[in-house]
Image (tube, rainbow, N blue to C red):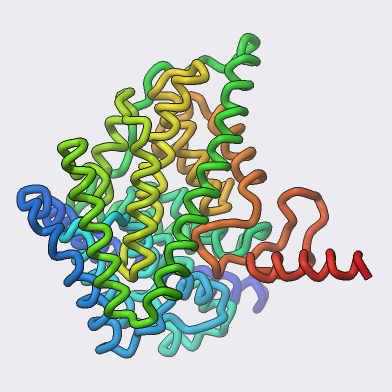
Length: 437
């Protein structure tokens, strides 16, 4: 005979099972439609290159949309991360806004991704369930994580990595196991729903993967060097985005003028690159360039140009995401640098993609799983080496300022409290000051 405690446990399971399945279906369907719309606007931009000249108008339009909806102080993905920790409520208005703003950015050739939109879309669509379900803060955190996982999974088709990422990205050093079941179910359901509508899972073919065995020491040493280099690239990427955002705000306080100026700068630089390379390959998400890197084709300067354009685009106020540009940067850098140190370009692209992704997100577990879902299990020990090194050596930098750390990266001593990157920096300054007194 079941005890009242066991009955509550089963009832809680059924509740989250229903929430996860329903949210996975809804968010998966919306994510699939969003994916198709992104594809359409990208095709329109590629067929009408002159649209990039309208970027100075697109930026102010995005600012206007957010202000009309009372969301001018929206923190983007950082707000979703805070919602996943129960620190603030996520607005349902975020979903339609981020869809519209991301489509404008991609239509006009801004350099941005789609996962930031996916995380915000999922968290926003699921957030209204808090009141009718009478959820407390802990349950609300799990709810937002479910939405994040479903949104990420619906656009990328990597359900396991999406589920673990949604849990891992909120607080580095702690995994909330209570969220695993609902996040996995929501994420898998969203992936199935999106696939049924026609969204193909993201995957890359890696060739010339070294066999892992007794003779792998030299290859492992080369991958170790690659991991160190990936950490450096991830630091450059995050620093560029942070500096651009602060520079824009310091020089141009008015949000409309800032977005217009940023759009003009990106458009002008893009035209210059076009005259030099005869392509707009660094605008939009650049997924085809990632695929080229896995075929062994990458221009050595491509990853730096992508970093610059992405920082200038997002820093000015355009919307989208940083993850696909990160994948672009990592794959292209890995293809080029891998060949320099004696790895095959295709395998180097895989190692670079995984290493840079981990360095900018501080999510080693989900990055390991992502590498399996994107590349398969061949070469996994090598990917893990690069991921671990990039995670440790990238320090406390990252794409999301709202991300908190519980464990110290460079020692086994935990902080014993949650700290954001700015709080860690402040604490270090105080320690230095105390040591000098």
